[in-house]
Length: 432
Ligand SMILES: Cc1ncc(COP(=O)(O)O)c(C=O)c1O
Image: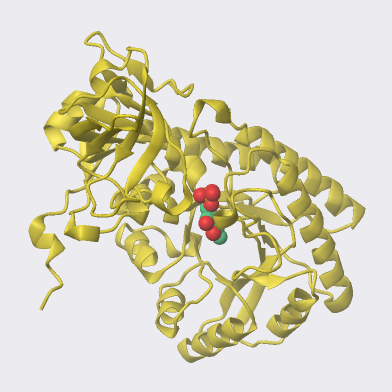
């Protein structure tokens, strides 16, 4: 099953997640249900922390990109495992602070931060704000000045690299909504401006080239472009950057054919290239921050649904309609993202059918997948969709006023809820 050791088939023939029977979980908490293997999340966090400590300059560390899955429990896990945190909204920052995450270990992102966002981040004491451009730098400077703070800032730059990933998650090219381009000369000009602002301390630069990157190549190119830029900035201004944030983007395997990316190996290669380039430019190696999101939580997540009905259209497709869909996992509807699924009740049986997994929303595009290899589905079956830990709960909505599912975390063979199920009352709670 996707080469994931935490997914097994138990004596009853059921899918077991980290040793816990999926049908038992579905019975205990109801469906749809997000299941998160907390032991796996923590192991992934520890792996990134270790690899970055081993292969990158002193002070380097990963910051969990909470956009992948944000709730208080995840913030606590990140802190306990020694990670910093990347937040991209006041809502994510609020969640982190409510979980007592140390603000100095938080980097606040966003390409269109509001006055209120910046005020909240600066007064909340965040370690860094990743500024998206000149206007924002000036706004941070003004707000920090009013609050009597000298705010550490990373300037987000775009290197003009195409990591050849999916267009919706490709952010390294010049013509994107994020950051200030290096190739056009704008990044250098904005750096000069940043260095002249009184209430800002330019701590370095940030860059995120995209997601689902399987090979080190695009990251190495990112290091090449950024170190050349650092050297150019130093030559023009005398400024040396202590911090370089290389963003996230480590890929995960959604389907058997994807293969399992070697993230520790990629980090080692990044470290080697950084040392080489800094040596060539005689540049003091900056502390590196990276922001893995998907790479931490995606594979640890499984969503359980109950099949509500099955129909086969003569000459057409076999549909299994489940009690969730685009409300809890919009990624197929948004991006056409493919998933691996199985019938948890008969997990060892051969997958004989190509099934269109249909969601419950009143929208023909509400599908979890088309032509998904699956055991023959029956009404009442529990279907498990794998690798749903990232960008599922965090992208979920109440479309059609369907309450969002809870998250059950598994640790040491025990389960507990870390997010409760929404109720019908919750769905109408903002209505006046
Ligand atoms: C600035 C930034 N950092 C980190 C990430 C996390 O990327 P991933 O989940 O692919 O690791 C993203 C994703 O959009 C991002 O925009």
